[in-house]
Image (tube, rainbow, N blue to C red; front, side, top):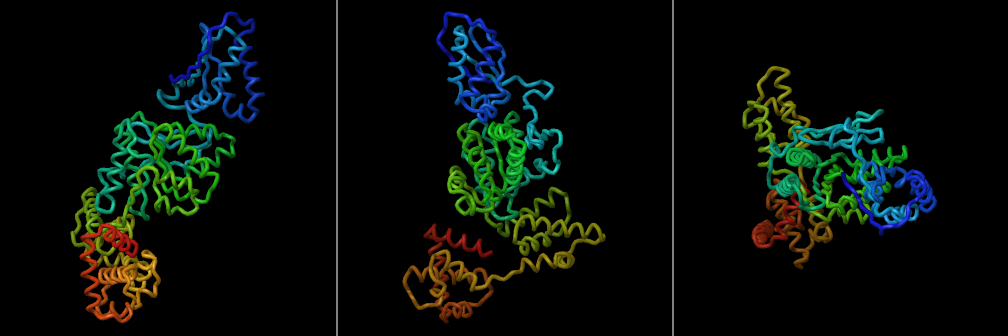
Length: 475
């Protein structure tokens, strides 16, 4: 049982009033001094348990309430008790013992008319109250674990950071851990994997995982039913809070305000926060500056678009797990042609296997091309030299016209060479064709640009990172 202790000097007399009478008078003074709203929010639920040997024992239903009252109203409560009964030496505020029928170590269900997505032990636990909406339920997906997450160059930082957080028992490695990347690249997989690992390694930790959309939905319900205290306690007393797709609350001021205070409360308690989004904190439009700043406090790990090797590894892992026999050339074909994201890649494999099972035919390269005709067409988008020029000009902050001009200043010439290099890497155009697109330059000029950029990539880490970033954005 958690306690907060307030001590006063010993008195000499004894109150003639009963303890309950004293407490009722103190309650009325607190109501008068702090106002009806504050009293109902924080002080109304204090219960007098007993007075023994000059020690007043009082209780509150949750740790969050106990901590708040102790930090903000403790001294005044002690003063009022000492004034009402000069034999009082100390006041002890405790968290009320749980009713064992609710289960040892579990909190009673909350009055928000909702499902509490917590998990304890090795599985998700849904604490359901009357009138719950089952559509709120989002348990951890058993398929999304670290064991079946395929690691490649594009996601190795995010994976390593996720594992470090999941395996930390006492300390908080980085707070928050912010994982971002495009659609279908594995953010949610890592979030679920962290949840499973924490449940297995530290079953006593209280963890909540939910989407930012559901966080907002629950906050709105709490406001509607005037139950914000239970909402605050639910989210601010956990050991680990995981919020998926945080970009959803961008532009939603009230929800951002509540999330901001929840974030601060957990960080102040050294409790872990894990957040995912579709872009970096600095690029979250509609998010308050103070919130963007806090999201970038800890470790920001991005997941890049997959390369061919990683896509092939994911497909090989999937067929191995399902004990599926398939021609390796089919997997190589899919890894080469479906480049958008992992979700679409796995969906393509599922379509091919479902077609084979339903029509009773073996999977061949021809049948794969037929079944995935629409998907392959969508992934066949050709990158143009004009697109490359525009993206490189934006990145290096030069004008589009500089790509065609005769200017030789390094601030212009180097980006132009980068654009030529990317044009050769990402298009099937010949060197003379590329030269013509850059102001009618000769193919030897393009060859010089390719050699120069390849040489600089080995020497200049910053330039190499710029080129990799531009390539990922264009692909």
